[in-house]
Image 1: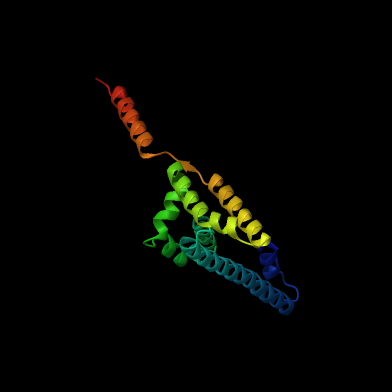
Image 2: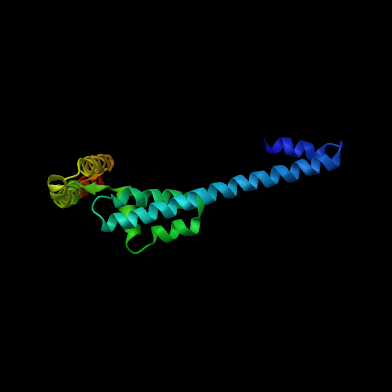
Length: 175
């Protein structure tokens, strides 16, 4: 319902008691929906943050997508928690850098190589077919996540582009 509808009810000269009850219930339900959505996003933020922290330690969980999800959920639920996460000593720079620049190809390959080196022996020597399939699916999901993350340019390439920008800026100067 729109605010105009509530305003029209307030201005009407008909049954004031029923109108006040309706406005009270409408206000209460609107506030309850807002509170429930904040609770939902806050719980999702803490869940993603916990999985992101576990992903920093465990090689099978990708930490960055969960930290990005926590930042999104905290942004929707609590500005204070969002600012805390974005200004965190370890997580904040990672989230900002991934969001703005992405990971370099070298970082992607080195992270995936470490994960593969840790899980490949388990996949090869595990007697359980279910565990093997589960780990293969996790490796595929991690590869999919890495493909989806933007690939940043390496240091040498960026230095060349900065030098090119300087040269073009010098050429545009009026002599």
